[in-house]
Length: 192
Ligand SMILES: Cc1cc2nc3c(=O)[nH]c(=O)nc-3n(C[C@H](O)[C@H](O)[C@H](O)COP(=O)(O)O)c2cc1C
Image (tube, rainbow, N blue to C red; front, side):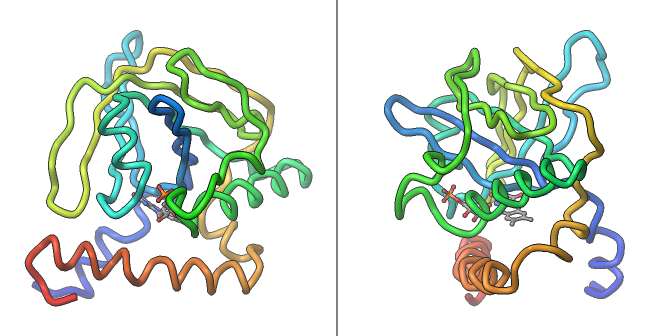
């Protein structure tokens, strides 16, 4: 395999960071994911897809609850961008296993019980109809059971967020990502 060509072909295909939340009983949590997308071409019966690493708490909670909310984040106006960066920083570089990440964020309860991030741009809520075990992660397919556009504004791209996220946070993200990548390699039978 030409790994450079593979990275060129596959890298950066999913540009929009999504905030994925769920609730399972008393436990509510969320993370940032780039792996989300549409799961159907049937406009009147939309489906959403998301790939969650087994390393992450949100993976286990979605597995058990069978529900999640998937939020797009806003690129503008400036106060909405600030809110988007706060969501990324709250959810994307630490685990809910180490403390509640949602208390810092404004939420309301969705129809699935998943916390809805009211500072997001828009969201869909889904009930899982199928899932695929992919060794290091699970891909969940869900029927969209609710959706809402929360505000006007453009969609935040991950590259634009990366340019303005604080350097200390990016370091925390890298530190958090390394054991996750090692766990993924182990689950594929490769050397960590
Ligand atoms: C830009 C970005 C993209 C990410 N994409 C994914 C993803 O697609 N799937 C996933 O499981 N984690 C992804 N992560 C990592 C999780 O957000 C991160 O490990 C999080 O801290 C997990 O939290 P939890 O253990 O509370 O669930 C991404 C993080 C960032 C910042």
